[in-house]
Image (cartoon, rainbow, N blue to C red; front, side):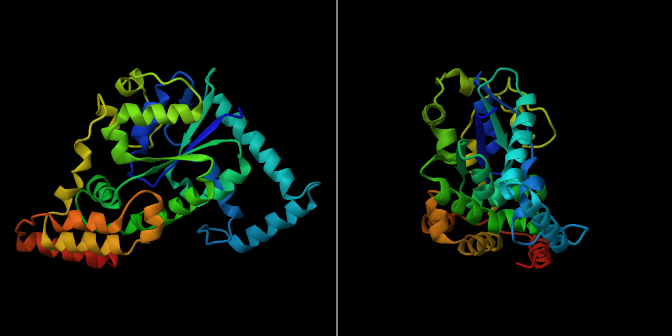
Length: 298
């Protein structure tokens, strides 16, 4: 299978929703989150890799092995591409495209683009405060200790932006907010990019599409249709003075230029944040939030 679609995003950005919309097209197949390329491509990177074995010795051994191949690294990449495309093909019937939606592919966007230069690349962005709020509510049960997600929240948007800057001439950028507000228009835009016919039923059929696998957003399975109620939901998470300050600090930690490449203006989001009317917080909840922030090292 040579027709591949890679959907790049950070976690909690609405990628499962977009995946299900696209899966409703008869020419696109997918599974929840393959993750297959992360262990195969990430060791080629020069940054840190946390493993039980010595990563530097592993990298050196791989380089030694690649140097002995007839065509060096090209031999490895060629065999890797054949292996992965065969695996993708086995997940489909007669569809034209296989869609790989693995949010943490933001780590290896350049490597994927090099291995699959003819693939289609869809970038999905979302208001970073909405993403942060979704992490807090979905993964942390409303608590502010998001330290396990720090890489997704702090490095993810920057790496996603770098990937888009690298591939913007051959990719398409979608904003989550536009996806839920103008679903048909945005979906038709994507179909045109993929060179497949648009069908308005794609928007209505998301509940019929069942994702095989345990990964992805479990709440999307309950949605009968695309709804825009999620657009303002982040404001209910940052509903006290302490939480507003917390959100402001997070937003200012992001690179404004990189974020603007994805279509988001930090000052505009800060203006929205400034309009929120904070609620009075009980001493117990204030202490819980302060402790969570302390534990997260933020």
